[in-house]
Length: 236
Image (tube, rainbow, N blue to C red; front, side, top):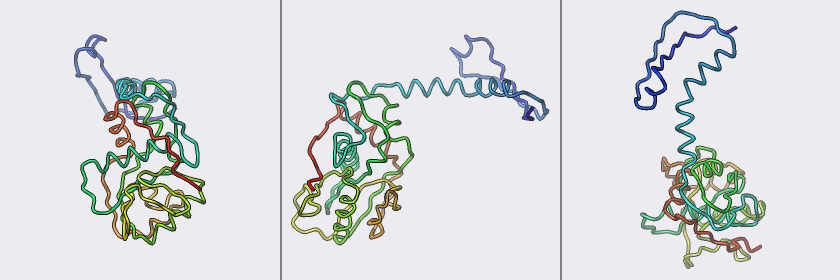
């Protein structure tokens, strides 16, 4: 038996909930004893409205994919490419860059595939269930060798606007000389997650306040039908 503060919900008929936002809540300091089953019923009644509302939001169809985007595939794959490209495109679409920018993610952070057909908000919560913040990290050119070594050690990971081959990290923009560059990634990776220790070389860090998951959702909505690049970005 547990002691909790007595909370009484008076719902004035099923029709009242359907047409009104008023729910009468009476709280007192009177201590009552209830068993586990009663407690579960009270808690369920408190959250049921929010649960139903959230389910409706999660089931909203926001995009479509013509092919399966598989979660675990190295050295690179459809989901890895899409996620990195989506991050890069959303973050740079309204930005004028004076130095190159790449997007870097980790395969382990992508937790679910995106299956062929309609895609819902819930699908992207499964893909990225963590509240990871998008960050911009400026690195000197000396960090390029460390990034290449990292990708070799991992057997590949998501990257956009660059490939890694026998020449090292090659920017898609084909810049001739790189003194510094931006990496767009998550706060988790910036802080050394998944052993991305090359971020210790950062000369500047910008926190965006945007969740990576929300960026994916915005990119999916903008594309409507996901734009998937199937190229192999790890040529080693």
